[in-house]
Image 1 (tube, rainbow, N blue to C red):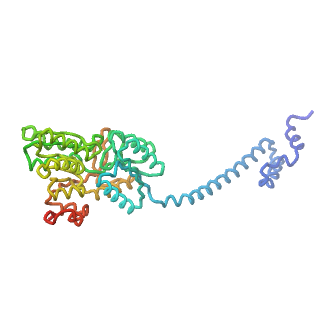
Image 2: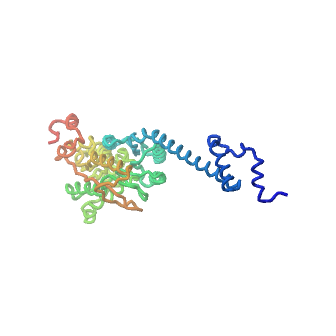
Length: 403
């Protein structure tokens, strides 16, 4: 009977030499001598030797996998070289381009973004909140690194902000701040200050009389903040009984036709006894002036505005609109483009202040608005290149040209 200690040796003696050769043929030539030498010199048992073989194979396989990984990494790096050199994509979600100033904003934003090496992908919702949400998804799917948002509804647009944040895409609100959301940055003007400028300009000229208030879109947060500023500037006059509010309405989507209807109703209710109209922008001012013209009151009633649209500047020089508020849109749009590129790069933005949006304090850049009247058209909107002198002159008789 064989001794138990002989079993491994006899077992090995019965195995074919080919059974001791590893299955990886590329390592076979050096494997068998190592096994034989280990068995003869050190008396290693078969299982120990087999483990050595396996360790050797694993070590060689690991080296091969590392080499393969390095090769694949190099290949992948070469493949992504072109996308890395491609322009940074910025998504720009517009509410609407129907109002003249928004095309000016967009043109200046795109120009500055291009100078910074960025590409701007633009979507316009034309007042449709659901469409704007879908457009935001489209832009994010296209690989934009930051979203610039002009919301139609500042509350509903929180869905867009939430979706962007879930995908780690920063959001910059332009001109209209989205409420109660994790907005990253805001660029615009202080709407309350603009409202105060509108009412104050009219109250200085007419500290007594019947006033009509025409607000912007009720879905636009700026329209409501404007109204707060307008009332603040008028409140002392109202409290003294010097000014009476005889008409008050909101123009859906800033529609001039809505402003026309509000103005017509106020004229009928007062039998034309209206002293001033605090219109929230130049579009609503135009609608109100149309109603005044039909009642032969244009030029007799003071009317405010905002945005310094070409039509408004012509009306101011013609005498049917009293003033408008000019915002340095070119500078504002360029500042927004620079901030968007910085957000995409994760870089800090210089000279930022802050503004609350309900749930957080948002970093912001504010630009100062300017009151434009007949006396300073040339020194403001024309000097800045915002409006063209020749175009204005073609629309007016020479005696009404700006000085």
